[in-house]
Amino acid sequence: MSAWVLHVDLDQFIAAVEVLRRPELRGVPVVVGGRGDPAQRGVVSTASYEAREFGVGSGMPLRVAVRRCPEAVFLPVDAEHYTAVSATVMETLRSLDATVEVMGWDEAFLGVETDDPEAFARSVQAAVLEATGLHCSVGIGDNRLRAKMATGFAKPQGVFRLTRQSWFEVMGERPTSDLHGVGTKTARKLEALGIHTVRELAQSDPAQLAARLGPTMGPYYHRLGRGVASATVTAEPWVARAHGRETTFQENLTQWSEVEREVRVLAGRVAEDLRAEGRPAQRVLVKMRYAPFETHTASRAITPPSDEATVIGDAAVALLERFDHQRAVRLVGVRGEMTPPEVPAEPG
Image 1 (cartoon, rainbow, N blue to C red):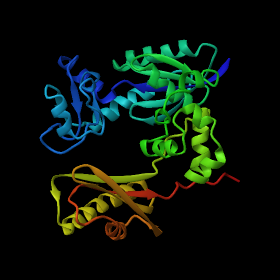
Image 2: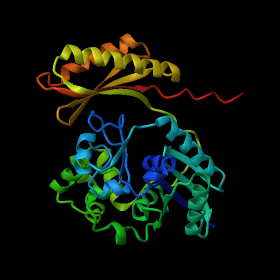
Image 3: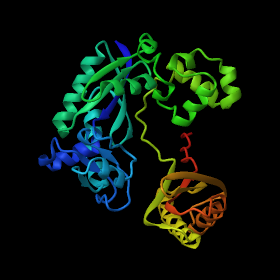
Image 4: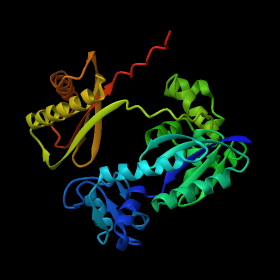
């Protein structure tokens, strides 16, 4: 028996859940986001595969999505229903002989011991389909990174194995931006160093990466290039690190007194979330999206940590000085990063 990490990812989860509720939408382009009205501001949460063929993707403004796919059916986000369906999926996974680490509504890592991980993966797919009517893709790896990367090759509804032995055969000539954890900006920084592919990243000088990208992130990216990551899967419940609230305005805000007022409202809601969690914020972050669609953030520490709306609001408003007051604002957000949960003392 060998130890494996499996990454289970529900295919087009939110859109698939909506199609289960509305079978007449099967095969139809479906876009879920905001209030479901593309005439209003909002972003795409999930697009069905049929909608993706028209270039519609997650995070895209709904107004852009409707231009690309005017025949799509637009639906509002129903977070409560998605949470309930996700809970059924995760309970189904826990019923199998595996350690289950939930990563969100639609994905989880499984730690399993088996001599036939593909057969186990197919049993996972069958169990989820029987319990919920939803399809999933399963990546198999010898660590978490390779399992998650494998899922991308498995989609949709497939199974794919990626290990140390096959890493460079599969990933070597791919661009570094294909790696989970390497965004567009980081890929550009790597290109400036002459590093374009995963293989080149793996063969690069860790000291040079550390000098250019930082003593922590440089070696981290070097490990990504080699496919090195933890193979540990834990069943410990996920613990939130922060609570945030944000608002997209149907009309751009140009008066920063209005921006300040909205920030204080959001700070109040964040404070309520923190008190419900029972953990104060030790850092406040403000997110600002200028018109048409450029996003910036700024943050500062709170000393001592607090869950009071006034304290969080004052800190958030102070951060507004770091933004460009000459630009129109389409979205603001406030996020409170909490202190770590208390660890119970061991008895005796």
